[in-house]
Length: 454
Image 1 (cartoon, rainbow, N blue to C red):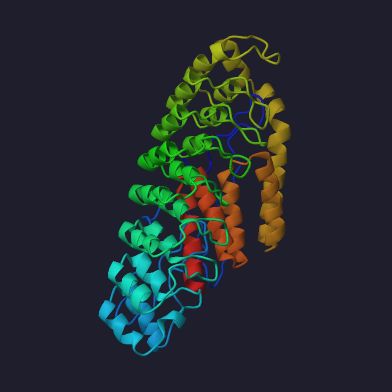
Image 2: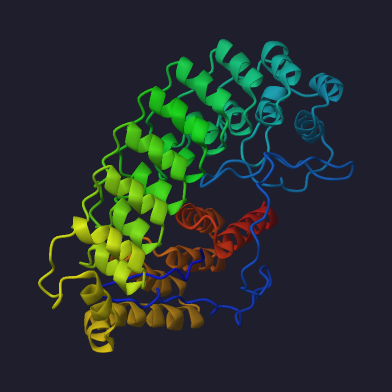
């Protein structure tokens, strides 16, 4: 599914989501290629970039939605500090020990505040970590400028032995970075089941909330079934709502994580939970045409009479999509709708196909969305990115699941040279539409920009 997924904004409305792509291709930038065409998703980023003989120190890859490690450090002169950091990143213990005789490694940091221990933990070099802590005196909880600790990196890479060592030396596994993310978020998002178990065994709170959600939200979004099992076994709340919209169940639908959805329901997830914006897991599943998801949700007690944020109930969404089979499934579960002249499967399908009714029901909402997107596009064309983002935000208020708006806003942040914010919106887009190449393209552009800036 791509960002142009069919969306229904009003009763009986069947028009597709209005999108702004492609629209930015004509705008060039010396830092960014002008092309805005979708590309295939890149492979999952490695936790760190291996150094070459003549390269500068390259710290671990930037973690999801967090200002963690820059993807490459600024060019460094070959000072003892620089060589020490490079040795830690490359797992070169002998070289690291030689540099320790020339410089106090406790003072060796890059411009992000990352120490040799951060690099060694990310690399998974246990011997280097032991040397740095026990012989060089580095603090196991030394923090970067964004409050990231070595434990954070070890958890992201699933380096359990390093994690265990740091914990044994007194590291605090609950330390949060400047955006509220903790090590458990990283381990869960990356699918490191053993790392998740270790952190929970050490008493880490199972449901910390950051700007993206809880570890359960992140594991479900990535369809990490085993991690979801572990989190639920340890009491993770399957009903917490993040960003006013996303329950873990909604994340399962958006990410097409069927097994995770079943686990959540078995754990007591409320199939009718929804945020202030209106959509329920059922309305989202119907709107996306996910037959298996709809069947399971209905069997679990999902209410087919709860409308989405535009007032349309699931059966109207299905009819607007031309999904007769879904209409037949939903019909016995749906109360008669006064605006439907003939209450039958055929009657509902005929109403949805009526051009006049479709236009009348959809025009007001669709027109407002089209107008807002047009004004956003116009503002972008004038390089007025703040105004463009304002209009995109108004569209998000109407349809908080419109992934294209997050992609567009990501590009605005990029033009404003706000790499972190561009990356955050891109990854929000990925969480909502993980199979859409444009979302991955946006992430790649943000990461590339941040690498260039570092």
